[in-house]
Image 1 (cartoon, rainbow, N blue to C red):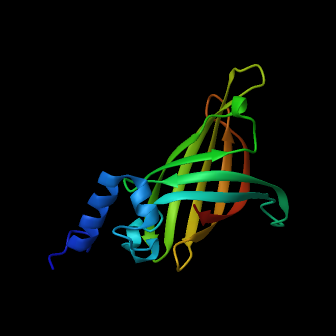
Image 2: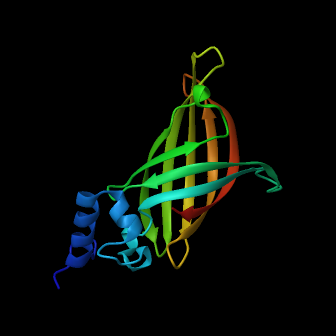
Length: 168
């Protein structure tokens, strides 16, 4: 089998092409009936996930608040995130990217715009996380850092979070 520059086989390239042409739903259900855990490691995160986010004290790790979110990881490396910690009038959906970094491990970074109660622009919130995917590719957990910026991108607040997720 001929290998690509990053050591991916033609089978991996074919699976990626199939995911991109069929949409993220194909990857979430597997390709040709394969479970997600059988997909090439670089694509196993692809799909829609129900997430439980827990904001934590960065020093003591004590839980401060927990809320649900939904994540969608696409085969092209893009990501969407929708969380409910703040009302929809206070934030936009998040856009970001994700990358494979090793066996069952990925990084993810996303950002959303924040708004004041009067509707004026308040700045952005950015999340950086490391994702550990379960062996069966149906669960993941994360460790995340959160940064809140004003309209001039000056850091106002930083924090920590953990997440657990189940594939939809």
